[in-house]
Length: 350
Image (tube, rainbow, N blue to C red; front, side, top):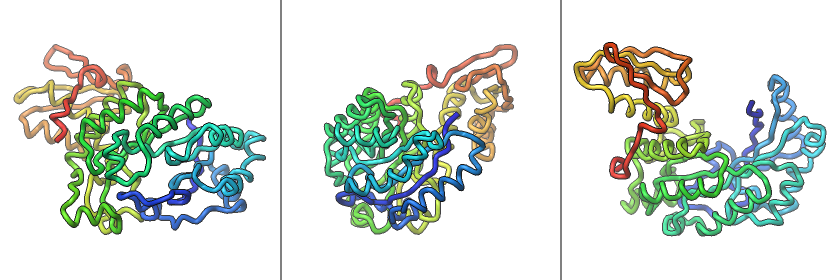
């Protein structure tokens, strides 16, 4: 069972500069203030009361934790040490820039209870990194991933398709390199044009063309399928909707409050759509946990099939594996697997 994560947002703290896409304060709804010891312990206690006895971990999101001054890192981690020693906390996770990672720092973080490090990789294409003002190279990201794995910590990677200069092939290649590095999980955050950023200025000047929702979903489906085929968990697709992200702050880009659901359900839609034809009457069976993916939001996938002249019913079937879909036509049954029977080409993305 996954541990309960107690989140603390340290927006833009530790970052040496602002990337063209970045407005962490908008994304997190936080002004970037660092929590004090009392605030840390109080929030942990509140979350523990509703944890149901599950393991708990503290997470420092946003900013770049390992780039903070060492005394600041120590001040944030020191109050947690008694809880880590007693087992009340299972560990700490943090996010940081790749160029803030080295062997000495990772060893020290591990000694102080850090068990998971998420790297803001964004891309492993140097041209994309330069155009986005990241201030580090793909080689530095590769070295940081290797360092984290070498020290036995869990490695997470954040990828941001659709940055300036990016292409579907470059995004896919970045993912392949993250897979090869042994990442334990990834997040996929398609680039957004946020008000007040350098990317917003470029967009207004006509110097940057962002992914739209349709193109972003197509690219994310390609990336998600490849990750699933590599047994790499994708723990989030798209930034979480909150008070900081809305029609006023998001000027353009692949943005939807339920983007992850649209992408995941899109895999099921595409697999089924390639194996049913106008005039057919079919029964579609899937694992119960996949039911909403097969139906689509507000049963939109059934409506699309009906528009194609296909009459379909969808039924749960606990005997199927989570990635299996069975299609029954008359007396024939056809079993398909998302990982083996669905394929996308780069040409289908844009």
